[in-house]
Image (cartoon, rainbow, N blue to C red; front, side, top):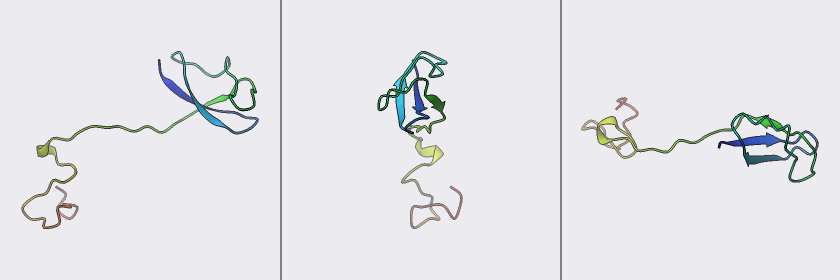
Amino acid sequence: MPIYEFRCAACGRRFEKLCALGENGQNLTCPQCHTAAPKRVMSGFAAAGRRDEAGGGAGSSCAGCSSGNCSSCGH
């Protein structure tokens, strides 16, 4: 079940809710003011992962980079 983000039209509170897939908020109420049917909003996401040494990533550098940044050579 996904976590969706909703916004209350009455008080403006944003909140998250673990819902059934495709839930649109019609069966929910705002946890702050209890107004019915908050609107589902787009929320940001974060991705975590690890890049292997061959692919670069934080702390990788090439022989031509003294700072370890590699932004100048595109490595």
